[in-house]
Image (cartoon, rainbow, N blue to C red; front, side, top):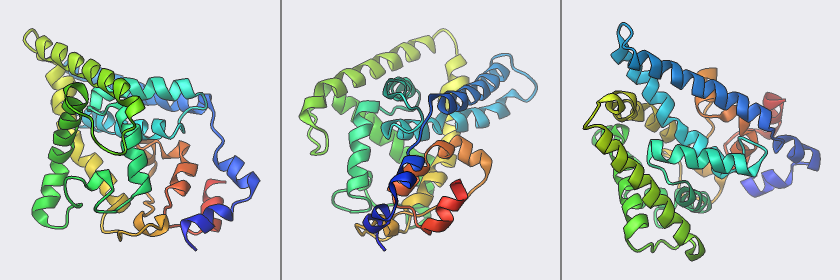
Length: 271
């Protein structure tokens, strides 16, 4: 059974159940997430005992906003489209991930998952297979370098990628320029205070390896085939990681992305 047959096997009731979303659940999840970030931030600002250690959970919470941005591109965290849009745009400067651009980048990734010629995630090389490339991947260098290039190109260069529709180029350019302007203000603020260094810059560098490990499990060493049941995998994990990754609100997205799992067991698990 391939992913197309799997989706066709679902009844209308199953599809309705899997795609059910509420603003209340999403807002509650977001409120807890923001409260944890605020708690870590307060500990750093007021320099509680051993406060430098708080930069690790602070960084993990910050970089895992990537998963919330991802869910917002799928419109899964909140029922209201405008809420998904606001949250997606608000996250963008914190992790250098322009939301409008990412929507089309990610759509192309879904369409051509693991295709070495057409998957934009593989545009700068395959996923790590050696110890050296694995360590480089964990450092987050590839991500930060790619995002810096994307932001600069979108802001001032020529947008040429086939998967980025021309009708959205203006929005992407405006978005990138706003983010870069915010970074300029952040850089200027560092001349007056090092607070952003401890609250944001160092934490996102420290947190990035944790996110890279999580993301690598989805497609790493999977075959370059069109069947989403083959080119992606399921990762079963604990409640902490599921909370960070917003998986409690994206069961249907897991299914549509073709995770390898028996349909009966899957439906029983989320019941």
